[in-house]
Image 1: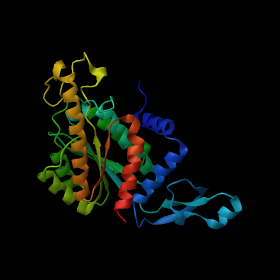
Image 2: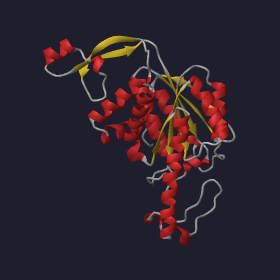
Image 3: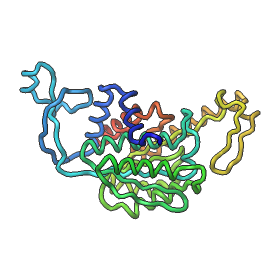
Length: 296
């Protein structure tokens, strides 16, 4: 039997992110929610990313190194992941792993941080056929079930992706204010989608994570049959080996990514693009950091 998905997420987090990075990520997550009611818990050593106002100066003087006050939230918050689990998520990501694996890692890390802070995690998942809501809960077992849900639904046998339908479902179904984290394929924000996002942004804190498409012209894919998961069309080998087309593809991806992030910024939404499993942790840190600065 394979290891539980959350166990894999934790292993990735603790193996590939040293203590300082984990502390910074934890601090950035904590900064997302403002006005939270807190009770003092204990003291711990200062790590980069902690708020200066949380330093206990008297305890620091006694200890000889900076100590910060740690608090327990007395009011739970909700983190709701909106994940497109249509066929597109079963495709390869830019880094070589599947987009499903990257999405599970991103959701797992943010979900784990949320639970550590006493918050609840839920899920809106689906495709063109059947969006559904997994009600928020605050345990690791609930997070594991949520990750398994994504893993099970996002397959090559899944219906077509339909992010607009999924976002519309979230707008209709989620009434309580929450941190809404959208995990999606590389896609432009058309006018209809822009309007839905404006509605969501009025009610919720919204973050966006795009999972980058694979570069099918990479040398390691030479000789392999590569098929578009959306319509099962193959990309001819002679196109994939054309250097001029490769340069045009790379430039087009850079332009599309910049345009996508600009569109999100115009909507007041913080977004980042992740290319593979190895850059999920730094991307999440920069996403939370950008969101904190945007709210000042």
